Length: 132
View 1: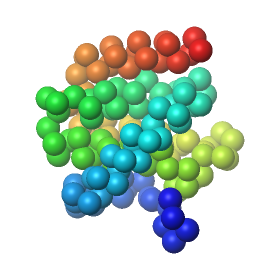
View 2 (view 1 turned 180 degrees about the vertical axis):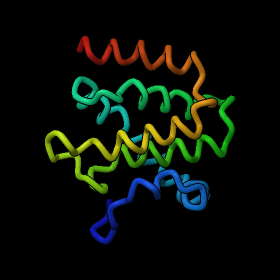
View 3 (view 1 turned 90 degrees about the vertical axis):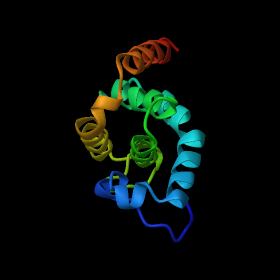
View 4 (view 1 turned 135 degrees about the vertical axis):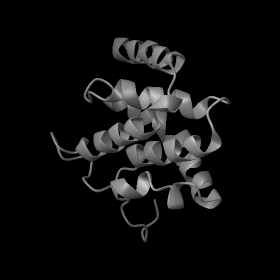
């Protein structure tokens, strides 16, 4: 994140008018590719929505998921990855509530695109992460 960048708000992460702009999609995809696995490894044992975040990750990477859904999923995952957001993640107890809200809203609106196989992949990955 650059020095001039503003924290992203939860509603911005899921706003199709922003998340589906090609330049924003590329930035979100780069953020997610670079930061998702390091962050999920650090936080999987501490956040109750880790399985949902992982299922969104697997759905976003699935070639069968529609492009519009992928764009919004990447926006939500980019919000999760960013260290500075509406409620910074460093605040114990409440730091991930906004991230959880974004993932929950995403699943409520695009949950039909998250298939059983994505949930199964997420459960297996979460099990591996928690064993490490």
